[in-house]
Image 1 (cartoon, one colour):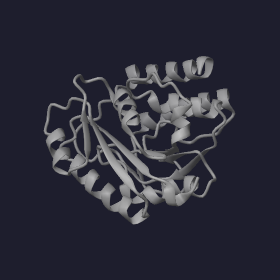
Image 2: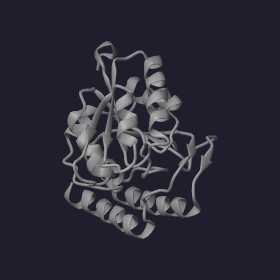
Image 3: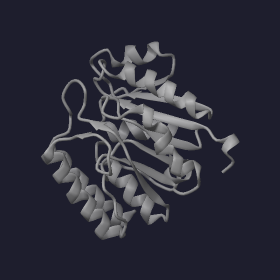
Image 4: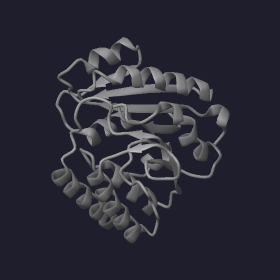
Length: 232
């Protein structure tokens, strides 16, 4: 891939994050400009009932609003369908990811060492503020993915990722909610793509409450891992 011809598509799914989405868009713009490649920012509004949509529109970026609240997975898939870039990046809208670390996430892809890069909350020296229950669940999902794919991963549920367009073009994603991270990862490994991780800073959402239900969403994630492995 010729670096001079590459374009980045940065997709931010949002659901009721009016207190953080503007800050994330602004910081993402600054971080992307510093990289020096053409880029687009795509915000997919999952029918927020607060002012998230209005805040995003004011930033004069590409904004798509779903007509129903369908979940993070569906919002990401809608963003993927609209993306024009050669490299697709996903980042959460709640302020837990640092856009300033975008260059670190992209480095293995730009250098040709990886096809998908996952920003890991649990590697090396980076600051992490995550709930113990979340950590326990992630360990279980990590173990299952390693068992099925023989690939060691420390943070299979991270939503901060960068990947070549080909990774997505080889997949038929079906997830509608938080299980999409596992589905993408397992299918990418099965398709023979190279997976890498880099440490990221993580703060357990800066405002509001998470929409993740440990039991309900945990069960969906487990099911998605099995189905992605069995059916691809």
